[in-house]
Amino acid sequence: MSGHSTSTSAAATPPMVAVPGADPRLFNDDLAPVAAAGRHWGYFDIFAMWMSDVHSVGGYTFAASLFFLGLTGWQVLVSMAIGITAVYFLMNLIGRPSQKYGVPYPVVARMSFGVMGANLAAIVRGIVGIVWYGVQTYFASKAVEVLVITLMPGAEALRHGGMVGLSPLGWGSFLFMWLFQLLIFLNGMETIRKFIDFCGPAVYVVMFALAIWIVSQTGLSSLSLQLAPPVAGSSIGHMANAAMLIVAYFAALLLNFGDFSRFAKDERAMKLGNLLGLPLNFMVFAIITVIVTSGTVKVFGEAVMDPVRIVERIGNPFVVIVGSLTFIVATMGINIVANFVSPAYDIANLNPQRISFRIGGLITSILSVLVCPWLFVSSSQAITIFVSIFGAVLGPMFGIIVSDYYLVKRQHIVMEDLYTMSPSASLHFQRGWNKAALFALGAAGVVSIGLSLLGSFGVILNVGDWGWLIGASLGGLFYLAATRSMGEGRLGKSVLMSTKP
Image 1 (cartoon, one colour):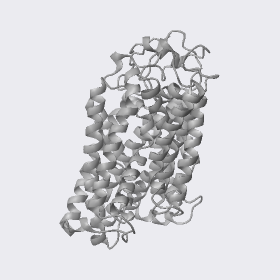
Image 2 (cartoon, one colour; image 1 turned 90 degrees about the vertical axis):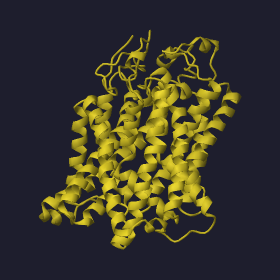
Image 3 (tube, rainbow, N blue to C red; image 1 turned 45 degrees about the horizontal axis):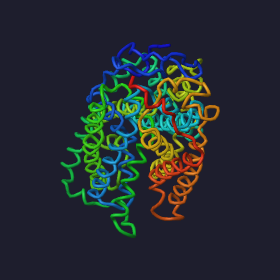
């Protein structure tokens, strides 16, 4: 049984690996493994993907929020360097099984959670993607709102009143962005890929221009400013917390990066693309963020964390129009990469017979409105808290998958067992569920979420920011212990005979 997919590759119909006897409850053209001939992504394609992911209004706002931890600009920069380097190595770990077997995240999850249990892992990741998709759409809609006011000043009256937390203009801008992104998606993956390739470089132009303008107004002295009072305790400890928030920020893609690495030509292309797109690209963007955010204190008398508002306050209509359009495009880029592809796969995995990648995307779009994402970003520290909490949720799943693939299964999987419900298959476990993975997820999740909530609300110190690492570590350790105790997770000798597709 074989199929073709147009949902995630630049090629119109990438060849798929034949999977004899694949169960329709686990297989469709979008979830099928990509054959070697269909893996044409080089290092630049991976690099461009990360550019689209990093360069966004949400990414800038999150980075700027780190200033309110009581660190100087240079301390934030060092923290970012440490955090993003850790992300680079972790991405290589989670991307390898998908690159080897050519399968997306929900199928990789079957290796650890079982062919049915993977639905739980997919639902958790999908919910996070849907919420964040809505959040990023909201960020882009703010740029639309600024653009409308610039072109039609009379629309200012529509900023008053409203319902469910949004003004009439806010609702109009949000729904416009929601529909615009959906139309691009429905136009096909080739259009999406070209659009993403444009997004990352485009925002660099505007951000460099902002940095140059800020420096011309303030010089480089603003880099030493603290945007919040210094916090008690060692600055090294607070820098470590900031670094861990960087890791938590990428927690979602630390699960589903395989949705993209499955198309990489080889492991070297994946690692080089990650190197260029994560540590190097992220640090350039971080330097610009440090310069611009610090400089706004001297220029405007307060720290402005939203680049859309910075452009708006400059006051030049041409600058406002160009800047707003650029941030709209950039945020759409990250939304497609980080928050749209994964939920579309995750939802398709729930019922492959009836739900394709395209239908999964439609469902994602609808749900992203219903969750009212603007409520998550209503305060200055809401993003930081949200990142910390959902990082604690996703961390255990990362630990379980990585420990299972590298330490239990030793990087060997019978590929056919990813698509069969046969009780004798190595990934069937107990009716398709791996009890060891479920136990590890529940136990580690309770601990990491509890610590994150306590840390976020000041009940205990310096723990909430470490929710992702605590969750990932406990998830891996609990899984290994449960596997040894229950006998789950292990594969038979046939695994050693598996071949790379």
